Image (cartoon, rainbow, N blue to C red; front, side):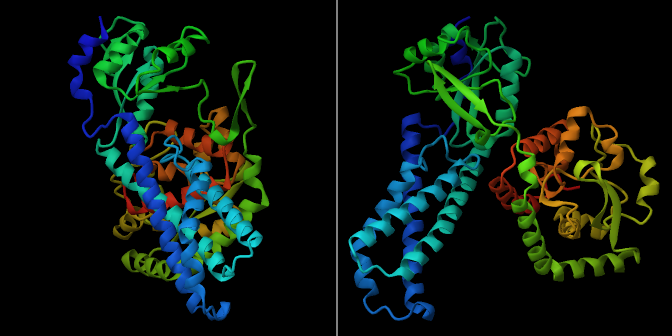
Length: 486
């Protein structure tokens, strides 16, 4: 069995709208540079108008005359600083927090460099303009990158702008990685085949086998793959990768190695080459960091602000629930919180008053600990609406203020669910449960129990305040998209 023959057979799997990898990188980089330039130019315009019209800064008669000569310098230095911290590396763009970290760091360096240059040259630069430029510019850059990411993800979810890839490894590892790539369409990978030591025609999940590792060059040419992903144990020896990399040096394909580490964030891993060996140092899990005062302060300020803003909406919901069936507005239930401590959990009542009594008559539609039904007959008309928009969760802001919950964390569990936990699942109770979390922004009730546990444990072990902010941002999209809300 050769890769060439099978490559012709599976040409239909190669995605349309696919450009050579080097052209994709060039187009991607140029698009980001143009977007960042427009964001910086917009920030400069806003800063000019703000400095001129805000009385707090005082008069500035020569403002435009001092800014225009150095406008190009401001933009160039800012873009160079962003490039220097990796904001245009395609590996950092579109996934995780690395891209946003780079934008923050690059902006900080740009502000420092331009500020020092203005001081050393005694340039008559308006301080008000300088402050406004970076105060407005950073949010604009972050919003621009967020919107760019959203558009790219939309294209990729529809099969466009994706890179064809080949997986290398045994069936078990290959199918496991393939399942992750199918879920994470935003990564932009489209699997066109597998290189496996077996002589089968396809893997158990139906991926076509193009040959063995020795057929990698013909397979790349036949499929026009832009990346080769090596699963754990795919290479026969430690030095085999270097030999293979030399063979593929003139191929326009990226080599990706999946290490034998799962659910460990990049922030906990440090790569240090020692004697030619790339050693990965893994930091301890971060559950204790999630209990620090900074997260608690963030929860208090966020919950208090949200309560004030949501008060009119909450009043309308309470009135609608009362009018529908004259029952209680708030549903109170015992849930298990931090370190297994029970607490009273609040929600707007979305079910009939006798919902708990009718529970034994219903059949669970999920496999595992959680109880979920897509068309639960106990849900009221008002309840169906507020569940779809997750508005029934708003009273939990009171739980957050009381210290029983956090804005972000694992879903709060029922005592009967905790009683069924396996030993490692108790790790979920090492942090406060959250009003939202990775489980909600990743599919909510459409997730299996195993996926829910995996996401919650990932959150506990890899907590960071930046991750909390990203989850809260993604929650807005999850609320507007009713998928999994039932």
